[in-house]
Image (cartoon, rainbow over all chains, first blue to last red; front, side, top):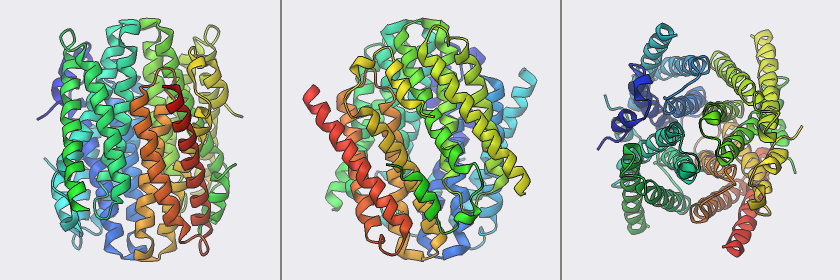
Length: 136
Length: 136
Length: 136
Length: 136
């Protein structure tokens, strides 16, 4: 069952919620979980230094996706300058993590899936940044 | 598109992943977002002290759901004693938040949805705790 | 007793740790706690809508300070583009929260302290961004 | 400069703040940072599977310490049942992480410091749980 979408619609100020915002919340949460799981899988691969940069970017990307999702959940009256800066940081982390995991995508299915989730979140952040820019 | 479930299946140690674990990840993430949104909606209701306890429990529940989901994403080789303690804390927070939001469910749709999401997460934690107990 | 500073010095790649990094970790952690406490105090003030924007910015600032501190703790081999974007987002949140809390500083001691902690963290982020720019 | 302690004293309901609470906030925040840094250092050691359990426990302990510190910052009107469950989970994570890092303490300074920070946080949680039990 889905609770997040009905919750956003029931918000007393839901008229202020931008197009693409709920999709960005979903993408950030999915990406955070996938990145944490990919870091754990990379550790289990036992390939030493080869995956060290990947593990660090996974954890950084998860931290920024989590913070961004938390801010997006306070959708009623956001400070758009602060939120835009968070979305740009999240977009940068997703792009870097997608590029890093993409290098291992052919050999490790978890890195392939993680790169896809990062690309999707990067795109969701970019779309929301676009609609935010128009709105100001 | 769903990335979390394929990611868990692609984990090199996915055979260790317990029944109910992926469902609990989903329930924790949904509950965290719904609780943060309910806190924001409660603030926007502008009802002062009436909702103060609700806002605090919403934020506490979100913090524990987020931490629990992060731990569950490292599914390959968890420390079951630590994970069980986290699941019990998460279950307690969900139960308390569901009871608190339930008191306002008739008057505020966001509290009704939040109580439902908390109940679902409480149940998902309890089921996973049961399968964990059997597994030890 | 302080564990964070000796820990950073004991890191196998501590030579890579930039000037200002450990100070920024401390400032981010302090600011996150102070912002969460200020949000809680604002709720306890029971002044309704007057403090709604303050509570939201407090929570947003705490989320970004927490994520930034987590990233800074992985100091051995950071992706400077991603880290710089996070530092800029944290700096923006601290500036906005300091301005908002500053409006209430004369009447509420917790908002005065929170504005000071936000200013200190904003400055620590700016200093680290400067040393990062030189290093690239 | 310290902002956290004056902030707690300025809280409109500071009379409700238990002995040991502010110390526990400090211990949780220190432990979270030290654990994240130890995980990063363990990855940089490039010792493969030997440190995999240590890295996972470090990350789990950091997640629970962070959530517990966030809850403790809302000190004015906590739900003691929920807070106690969080403190017990944090205590369990610190004990497990201290034991794991303790095994590597002779060979790696970062694991020695991490074990000490975990022990200190475990003790701070236990003391606060004791004062909480009396208070109910």
